[in-house]
Length: 378
View 1 (cartoon, helix red, strand yellow):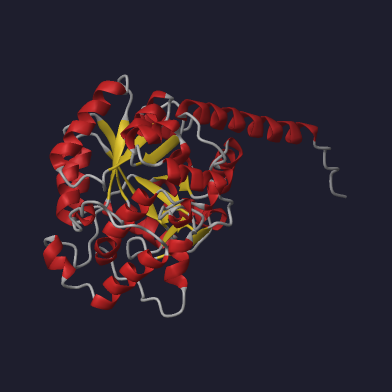
View 2 (view 1 turned 120 degrees about the horizontal axis):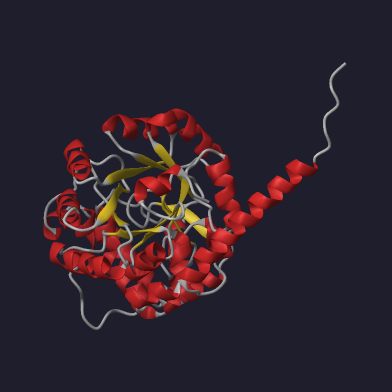
């Protein structure tokens, strides 16, 4: 499964794992892939610095990366109090009414309602990059377009590769022109923020669009070695996987209250997701639950733009998590959830991906070798 991006990133297998869990990221890197830590949960740069120091010490010298969210549209700055003035009262009333209807109890203590939005701010993302570049990272990825050119230059000065997600070929070309090294072609099936074009169509379009100017990773609908083989056959040099790591034992080491979420994901099928803007204000694929259904009912308000929607639903998500009710889980996940049927260690999943890839390639070689020769045309 070795491709040129393995040499570029210093990894054994072209499997890149996006995860908000440092324990998952470390386990993937130690198993031969590249763990990429999602930084949006870190509002405090010092906290991120501490976690990255821990990763430096536990990755056995293997590389890892970070993923930031650096939006470019207003309003993206200001205090939570400033931003809250943009939220209509009818939206607040709808959230409170819906939580009551769903039987979601209030929290014993009310957290800072704006804390969860900070990681989506441009200034916070910049601080995260500055911290990360002082650690042993090999990749900086941005989930919302190309990073600013000075951020790309700073990463390149440290020998760090820069990646950006794309849902269209035009987006991929824009990334390349901005100086991005790796384009993540994220299909409609993916969890979290995703576009409208399915991976089977999108991936070869982006591969053709960028040519030799950038490396392409495939994302969306990947949870087996067979699917990795298909991605490489379509021109990708590797895969970017996010959802599949949510049901790992290591995820619970970081997110200790995630057992309810994991049970909901394990019970779900590939048909149990929905693409909606209710999570962040931008289209994102979530597990379909009574919470997502409530937002889809007639009379529900339209989601607000990012980051206002984050601010609106931040405390609601905290209440939902504390309720331990799988029927209302608010969790981004891709259609690959239908294959996430048990909670397993990262090392077991990595080994299965590699063996599944080998089996798929061997099967194709056998098919080619056994094919009857085509008689010459007369």
